[in-house]
Image (spheres, rainbow, N blue to C red):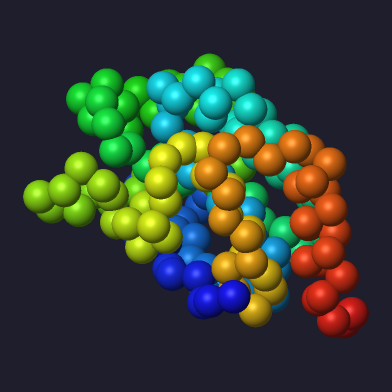
Length: 156
């Protein structure tokens, strides 16, 4: 378990302001790294993120989308992402990973050493990265992971 690197986001959607992992301490954080032109992301990860956001409302959990573009940059502008978010009725916060000058790999993707999309990152209430998985995580496995992380949070 290591401290989760801070998100490096250049623009946010579906939130009143920037989100930081330090401000979300005390909550379980699920980060869904995706590209809107990635089949596995569109068919599995993004719908699962929306279900998790809807299902865990009222619990100390924050679901965050991270649009991390490492290919086809010209096709995945922030305007195209805004339309995608609206067309798919996505309501969870979504950040746009900041580009790294001179590299095709954006900053947060590099900080987490992600190997592609979709990637799910689970961060515990103390800000420790507890799981990082490339590819789809079945709903039952996600539920077990989240419930285990929630049980670690002391009761108020």
